[in-house]
Amino acid sequence: MPEIKTSYHHKSTGCASIHHLLKNTRDIPDHMVEQLVNSLENTLTCQPEIFVGQVYDSCVYRIGCGDIYTETKLVFATPAVRNKFASSFEAACCHAGFTVHRSY
Image (cartoon, rainbow, N blue to C red):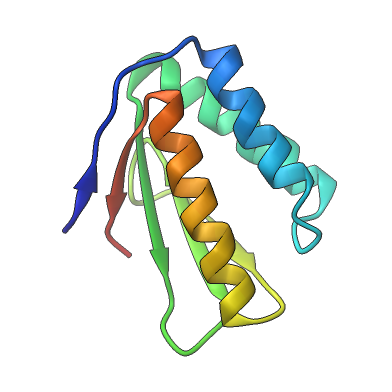
């Protein structure tokens, strides 16, 4: 399983960029944006690991905050939109200090 690591940054700064990315992705409802940001902020404080994955041949992208067993499932309009979001999201998480595991 590939893993991406980077250094820790202040959680409000890092999560602000992730919040901005999520908020500007029209396939993600506002309530889910807030739920994900809250989960990410809580995870960054105690165990800064994110588990992500794309379901092949679909528009699904999964995010697990802190452990692989709790996940948020996002569904995008097309696989190309999903791939673009996934790349940006994973980069933003690394910048915020998360360890990103591509595991689903």
